[in-house]
Image (cartoon, rainbow, N blue to C red):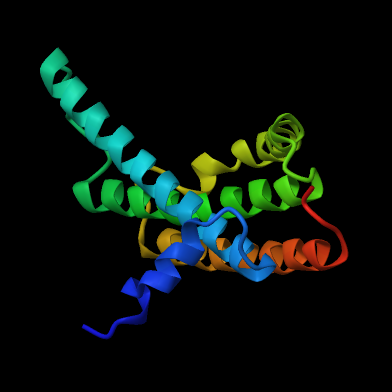
Length: 156
């Protein structure tokens, strides 16, 4: 199989600590987005299993399974926005974890109140597409800003 994604050099670049600056932004974004998506899926599955074990009723009054699945996908694509914000602040803070988290939480708190509007339980295809587009724009835009900062400064 000649797929470049599974090339050992590419995998090594994604997870290496001392990589090229562009690779740093891309690899950290990819790893964090994947981790965030897995976290949301695990939370959803855990909530469903916990509810079933606890005997909670799943009546879904006013909702349907398609809306819940669209909500799940919209939330996963929205992770890209928060990953881009955290990565940019990590670069600005020169990898000082406490400062990166503080800055990210400050900006994230303003955006947090918009999450139910962007990913409602009765979400539809438009919500999914808008979150995908917004996540991509944030990831590319803030990734470019992170690269500009990295080109002018050092992380250490």
